Length: 463
Image (cartoon, rainbow, N blue to C red; front, top):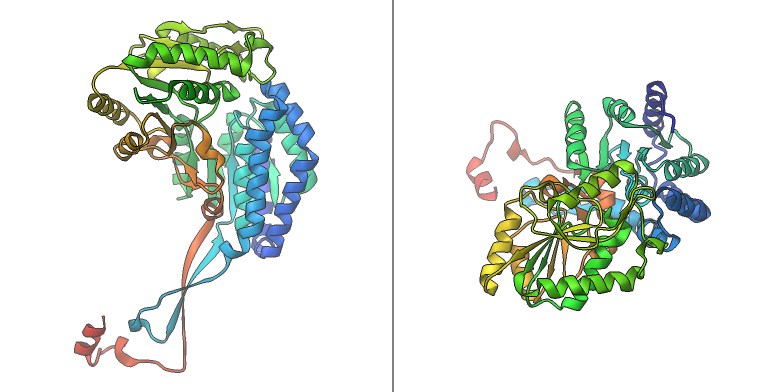
């Protein structure tokens, strides 16, 4: 895919700056109209987007719709319904000392925004932030990933057909294009990707004190207590780890399991993989492939970091990696220090009584960077206790992934897994500035605030 030139990036940026200054994006009617246009465009381009997702990632139509298209459509519908209420001027309480003033909270768009998305969910993770930008009244430049060229080209064509580029535009290319984009001044940068690249984004943003939303990743733990329902845990974890072939920022990354139930879990996991994908996983059209050869080589490289206790099948020609469990993993190996982003699962055994197990789990999680997600299988009350003693962007008790499926919940990271949040009202808030306004009547002008501060003893009592 051809890189967008620096000159064109600057031209688009200047055109969007001038367009935002006209105030046309501010009205609620305009925002709703643009949201409906985006919703109609996704419906019109659904087949082409799905075909591109199949070409780039071997993602089936069903998975594409469930994990990409339907999520964006639901987000748009929510914003159409609620944006007028979110954006409306709201009264705030005014203390007596400010009489005869009235206080208001006003939401205003941040302005010209940049959205940089990754390749793993290339439709959802580019267009969901766009919904927030439109809803808040901003303009947006969208930068999709070059690793999914078919999807990126279809999105470019869809956006060009739907919107004027002075309002919303797509630019294409590699990290040189990212660097050129980050050289420009924006009112917000919304970045989804790795913590390593986020540091580059944040450093560039710091030059202009530009606010950022960083949706990152990390190693999300999956804890399986001895009180867990093994069959249910195996089924849900097998689904969550093979969804998009593990190329999901909130995929369970490693397992901490009670030694008593490890063998039972491995057996149940193998059976549930067969239930999900059949005896020949390579033939299952719902099983996604690694995005490119580099990703295939990186993920299969983890095989050497321990003993394969299930799976280990792969095919370089088709970039296929089957679900794989690996035991006896050194805690300082790459498999336990790098985000896996593939269907390979290190399994760490922990022994001891319930209290010892939970303390060991808590200490282990807290000794590492804060993850984007946290998963616990076992007695719910014990799950809440471990959650209280740890930190993560989000999580589930006796489930995986599903917290992202509730559009009423905010989504975001903490610490090394990101900053800021979005979905529902939080998407609107991410692209908005909250402005405080005092409106003071002129029918009376109390003298107490003016020098030389007469009747100060009375003023002290009021304050």
